[in-house]
Length: 190
Image (cartoon, rainbow, N blue to C red; front, side):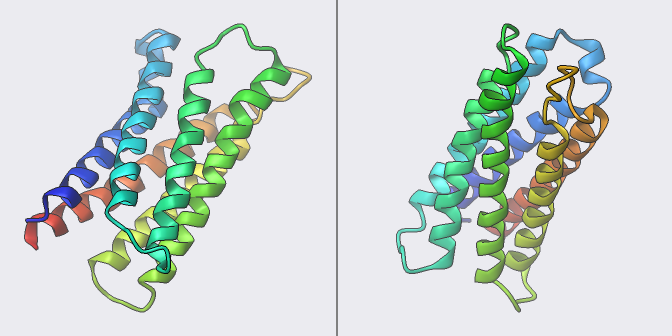
C-alpha cells in the first residue's frame, strides 16, 4: 500500500463529496444557505489539502505531472477564495462577479490546464492512471461549464443558469470522486 497516495485520494474524495452534496438539488432545500456555503468551503479545503500533498510528492519540475499538480494547487486556492467569499451575503452584483465568479472561473481554468497536463503525462497508456486522468479531465470540463453558468447577470443579480451551475458542479464532483476512488484503489493494490 502507498499511504501518501491513499491519503491524497481520500482527501479528494471528501472534497468531491462535499461539492456533490452542496450542489445536490435537495440539499439547498433542506439546509440554510450558510450551511450550503460552509459545505462548499469545506470541500475546497479538502481539495487544497489533497493538492498540496500531491504537489509535495512530485518533486521534479521537468515532468508534466509536477506541472499538473502545481497548476491544480493554484486552482484549489482559487476555489478556497471563491467558496469563502460566496458566503458573504452583502456583496453587490459587481462584487459577486469580481470576488466570487472570477476566482471560480480562474480555478476552473487551472483545473482544465492541470487535467490536460496530467492526461498528456499518461497519454497512450491503458492503465488505471489513464482512467484517473480521463475522469479528472471530464470533471474539469463539467466544473468549467458550471463556472460559465454561474456568472451573475448584472441586470438581475441572478446566476446566468442556476440549474446548470448545480447540475454541472454535481457531475464534476462525481467525476473527481470516481478518479479519486480509482487512485485510492490503485494505492491500496500497489
